[in-house]
Length: 248
Image (cartoon, rainbow, N blue to C red; front, side):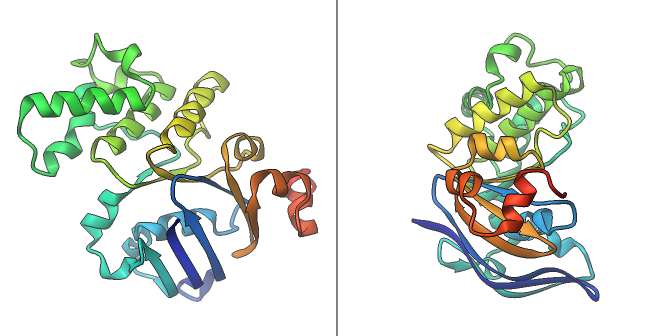
């Protein structure tokens, strides 16, 4: 089933065109990995999916982007960003306790029942592969966590408001291999319930976790296909060159 459908997408920042005639889709309950060199349009594409680009006054978009068959521009930003959550490259915990970081979004959406909030916080921390490490220190500052733990806390905070789609923008760029493995393990489990779009500069990570992989270059979608096909028999020689490290 198609979760997000993109047709003839063009994006500009002022006079500079960031994406050119992108047509593709995201399937429900898949991990779609997006790879490509710097300035290829990956993050612009990701931020477009929940309208974070709208914050830039020079941003202009043309084309059709549908989430569950509804134009994203006709959905209120608040609802869209609740349904399509985002985890950024650098972990951004709030200056609150571990518990209150995860509970923040739940409370913002109006829940006041302490028992229900506690249950949702525990569930989100378990889904984020963090519960066992923090269950006895929920009252401590989130800043006492390691970088890898902070990133998984941010994942849990996103999960707590029960999104439908999770966008990951290079979530492991600053993490050690052990922390990276934990985040990847979490993503593979999470796709059973969520749809995931992962932007990564690590082609090996894309190969490990992606069900399908899209390759962007200079604002164009070069190709998108099943990950094993992209990494063993890509249709375009530029894809093969990037994967082999010949450029980028």
